[in-house]
Length: 111
Image 1 (cartoon, one colour):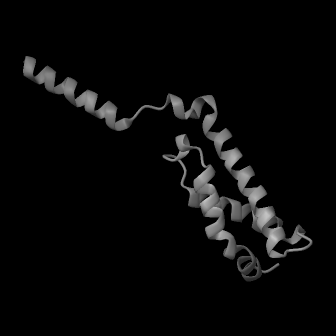
Image 2 (cartoon, helix red, strand yellow; image 1 turned 180 degrees about the vertical axis):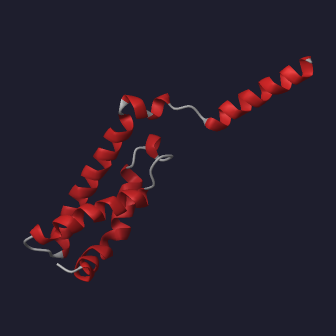
Image 3 (cartoon, one colour; image 1 turned 180 degrees about the horizontal axis):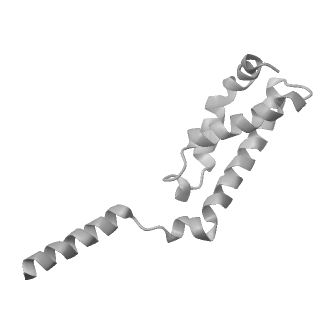
């Protein structure tokens, strides 16, 4: 299948998938991942498997793309929930800088 054909079949679903991604992307992942990134990853997965779709009508494609989007969202959640990437364990860089700066200011004032 040519790239243009795949683009013509998939592109009309971009806004629909973006709305779904915005609704279902875990809030804790918003700083790490944008809904449009999830949709782009969904399209990459869909493109590689589009030739396998027997009846590429709009209803079938919409359902198929929803499944791929759900899988992409689940994979993203798993990726960022691993212990070493746990969103809950992250600290705000800005807050760390503020604490460091206030500690430094107190040290200078004590001198």
